[in-house]
Length: 342
DNA sequence: AAAACGGGGAC
DNA sequence: GTCCCAGTTTT
Image 1 (cartoon, rainbow, N blue to C red):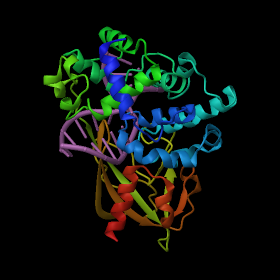
Image 2: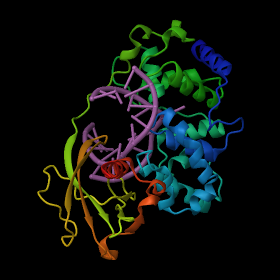
Image 3: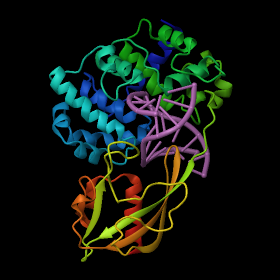
Image 4: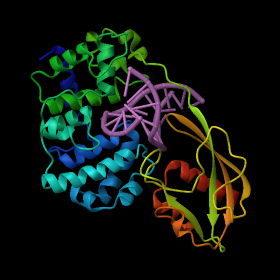
């Protein structure tokens, strides 16, 4: 039981922090949901979205019995939609194979879709108070600063595992992990760390260069891609044509305003539905993903055609329903551009 | 080992 | 504008 962790847990106990997904007696369903939602997603964003999702799917059974489209609808805007698809699959496995009870050991949790090394250990610690290496970006950052580790930190850096292990020893794994996570979120922040108020500053070897740690690796430039966005309405303009994207690739399974293939070189003409007289709208959308920039030229058209064979689960949707459909943010931008145009 | 996979919030 | 985020899965 190190002096470092004793002070940190004392600090944490005094904070007595209340979070929407944290309860005196942890509910494994809520712990799991929060951990998935928090993957590569900021605390502020999850705080804004967690309760609403939980109201639609209050338990693992309701989530398992929903359709994938319904789960994606309520995940819309959170990004990394494989999380929602895996969440849904995982709920069905929990219900069918585990009779609705979450397994309480790391190896079993690790086999479930969407649960990797970190999340398995985190659920085991927080929901079941079992020890493991729940190494996330907070843990790596705290370690790098406290030991002044001036090389890139990975999940298997031996010094990191030793440090975490030694810190955890003698403490409840749940309280220990929650203390580290809260510390990383509120004081030992990635940017603008609050070193003056740090309860363990005197033990920190890197407090004078905290903001520069951990060492970050260089990132690749993004590809620049181009596409047409096809805004197709029926004769009276009350309905717009939408389709569902395929199960693989970017925004997989999400409802979309149809787009052409995303290409390095912009196509000269719209190619979808040659019978439609596409008009240029002059509206363009720029959207940045993690690994590419997409530029969308929006063209509009009108038809009464029945287009059932056009794609999976495609069809006319009332324009008035669009806000409730759960579109990805790129698609919301396209809709917004068409409305602003009038 | 590297790439794919989103988007919002803070500065 | 930039940067980061309670990572996982696929290639």
